[in-house]
Structure formats: structure tokens, C-alpha cells
Image 1: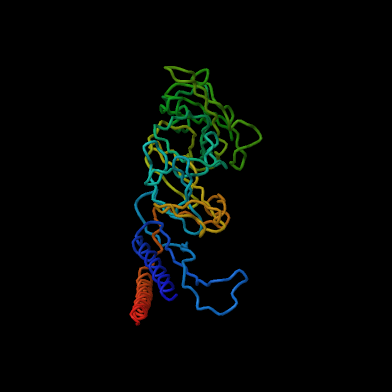
Image 2: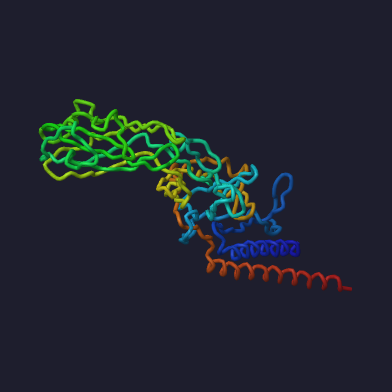
Length: 410
């Protein structure tokens, strides 16, 4: 009896040593979670239960659990190195097999997908191509591998101030080459259907008290019926110098016909943000929604896991948002190697949400979560396991000596 009991102790101590050895070996593994061997005693029972006290039949390993405590953050220079600060797992998919990980050392693969080092594609909430907003659909996150297609300008908005001290001029005398025929001018770039930059010039002429006409040119050519025909006639201001909203003269459509294989350009201009105060002419803001073709230059990840691409033309667009998984019992997850886990019946099904939602952690960019193995504690545990092994081995030796004595009896 003592022999088999001691052997169970030797096996249990060996299992403990195996777990401790694995922890120490993975002390520098990104996203690794330390394991712990757990034991239970063994008692024999009859069909009707134990009727008399028994010494027991040893020990068995009841389970090896992982400790999902937070690991330390190590900061890096890679934008796609991301760590979860709090609860949750990244969801990755490799040839249809879904796995979960805390190791956020991601990269862009040859097809432009955000992937793990082993090639599994990271899953995230998709972005609607039309609105640019994140949807509820989960799938692969892909970057724009080719040039970002250009977008023609359709809206342009300017704000600023027109000097109320200007004297009046006659619009019919306007000439873009004669600065004495207008009071102020400004330029901004707009883009055609092929992404070519076109120059939009606006000329402001004060024609009466609190009233301005606006002329428009694209690439030096008038966009109206004649060179002296105003795009906006009678842009109104109040006696206090604010734009008079009673009319709609602060909005106009600039049209340029198709030419040289480029589609017609139509820009809705909004200058209702101008004022007329007694100070110098100035443009405060000038925005438009077009851009030229662009090459991917960098990737950024926000604290809620939103993956954005920045292009050489200055445009930034959302590619997707990391989907984080939560489980009712993380200890029920089955390790499958490469610091990945798969769901099991014990873990329960995953619940997907965005970072920061439903008690999930936030995303730390330019960082990796390190192993949560505490080397000092593991070395102490190693000494204890070694002592247990040796003590049980000593019992085996003692039982062997007793057995030999019995055999040698005459």
C-alpha cells in the first residue's frame, strides 16, 4: 500500500515540476499565463461508501489551471504591437479555426491583412465602405495594399473676415489680373475625378454697404458665364458685421465641364462663416473633401482598438476595430500552443465586444503584454516540488527495504 501511495506522490511531484519548468521556460513569452498544478487526495470507497477509517491511497493531479492575471507592459516601436490592459482576448482565425490570444505582436501579411506571426488573421468589426463607420459585422481586418483611389471634391467651406472699411467697386469692371478691381482674394486646392489638384480662386468685391459679390476661377478660368459675372451676387451682412442668414447667398455651386478625360467638377461652396468686421481680410479655415491618390504610410491603433491607416496624401481612414472576446470561465480554455487558446464546454461560448465595453480592457498601442510568470516565486516552488519528490522517493526506498526484509525471512 505504502509503495503505490508513495509512487502517486512521486508522480504528483513530477507533474508539479513539469508545470514549474514550463512556467520558467516561458517567462519571456509574450502573453503567456502561468500555470499551477492542483492536487487532491485519493481514498478507496466501497459501493456503500467508506465504513472504516483508511489511510488513503495517495494523491492525484486534479487539474492544471492558468492564472490570467495582468502581465507587465513592454513598450515597442511597432504600431501593430498592441496589448490588452484588462480583461479580454484577441480573436484570430487560421483556415477557419478560431483561436484566442493575449499576444498582440501583429503584422501586415503579404495580402494586407492584420495577422499574427504564425499567419492567423486577427478578427475585428468591419467598416462600412460608404459611411466609414464601424459596423457590427466581424471579419478579417485588411489594409489598403494598393494606392488609395482619389476622390473628387464635392464640397468646400471657408470662414474668415472681409474688411468692412473697403470702398465700393463695380463688379462689371472686374478683372482677375487687375488687383484694383477687387478687394480681396484667396486660393485653395480642389481635386478632380483623377485626383489632379486644381486651383480654386475666389475674389471678393464690396459693391454696397454690407454687401459683397464673389467671383470664382478654377485654374485661371472663370466658372461663370462671363469673366465679370459673379458666382455670388450680394453676399449679405448685418449692421453688426455677421453674415445675414435670411438669404441663401452664402452657398453656391461651382461647375467645371469635363475635359481631357476627367469628369466634370461640381463643388458646393459654403462661405456663410465669413464676417464683415472693421479689421483686415483674413481666411480662418479652408476645407474641402477631395484628395489625390495616396500610398499607405502608417498604421495607428486607438485605445478602443480602432485600426486606422494614414496615407501619403494626408488622408486617414478606419480599417476596422479589434473584437475582444470574454468568457464566463477563462480557466476552461484549452491551450493549443503559440500562446493561443480555444474555447471548450467548460469555458463557455465567447462574447464579443469592443475594447472598453462590457468590462473589457482597453488597448495599449506600441506595447506588448509580457508573461505574468514571477521567476522568484517559481524558484521557491521548484525547491518545494523537489523536496516533495525526494521525500516520496525516500518512502519508496523504505518500502523496498521492508519488502526485501520480508522476502529474506526464513
